[in-house]
Image 1 (tube, rainbow, N blue to C red):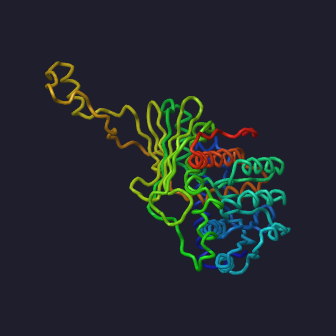
Image 2: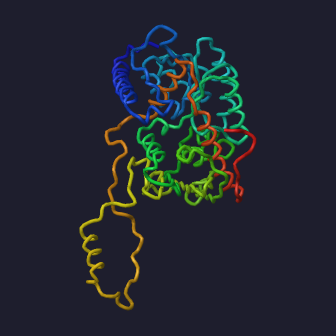
Image 3: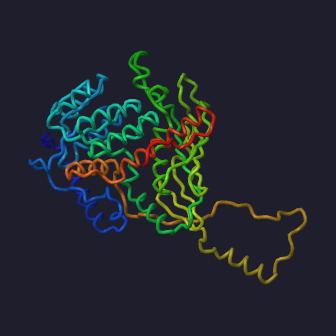
Length: 427
């Protein structure tokens, strides 16, 4: 692919400047030095040698696949040489976006036969992740797969097994691994700055029905696959998986068990997957992760709160709060008066306790000067790993732990019982 279009040229130059800035930041930041996937990302112009160019194919070019493709088309040194989708409108749109320079396929098996392909990006519905990942790795390809990893426990384990045999690059679509606020969050936790972690709370709230219009009834399940159990696990794999990956990362562990309840309490339109989910995960050392998600109210948006004995971190907001903020002047005066016995006893019938209201503190930013597109960064890191021929350390562990944890929550709600971490694979 030649970047001769004026729009692409400007986008590439913007991306080049961003990657240069990122490389400088990566080289000077102590937190990045401890994260192996943050190798300095290439910022130079595309070259003609095999070491410079990374040639990728994209399998699944719907809404998410299209976004990934546009990012890749703007990344220096990356060429999108193939696209694949079995839904005609997506297939034709991908051809148009690449101006016909990419070879188009309806069958991904045909794409995997290409001799000059360096890797594939998989952005299909969940139920297809495992077979395409496994076929791609067996064909000798490096693989980037959107989250969540797979549709069931056995598929997750099989992907890990095949990856370990292949020695190829495997990366999962967890953007927070490439987010500076979350990297700083991890640094804060590991340093003991917020004390002992006692609980993690996470939520993701929206107010929409997640339904898309279809050209005719026979396309309903293909287009609205997130609503049907044979294709998806709904909110748990599409949203919760992100925060569960972060919880596993923070705690350097995985959940031992999960319990939960799910319901369809708003969008009673024939869907099979819950529009409201509430799950509690039990981790080692008595730590629980409490997660809820809904698509009927967006007031609180999304957040993951890491609660420690000395402070709290809100990852999405990128702020840290102390458990011992400086006292306000009014509080200081009250304490002094109490100590000097100026105040008399509490009147009978009056309040004898102070409600545990939210601490009214502003907190401080984890990374006040950071602004970056994590999706672009993770794709650049994937290309860089292929270029260097080195799998990114720890990525398959993040993929497996996050994928299995999200499935545990779904199964717990469906089966109405505690679901334990599956045995049989060391990760």
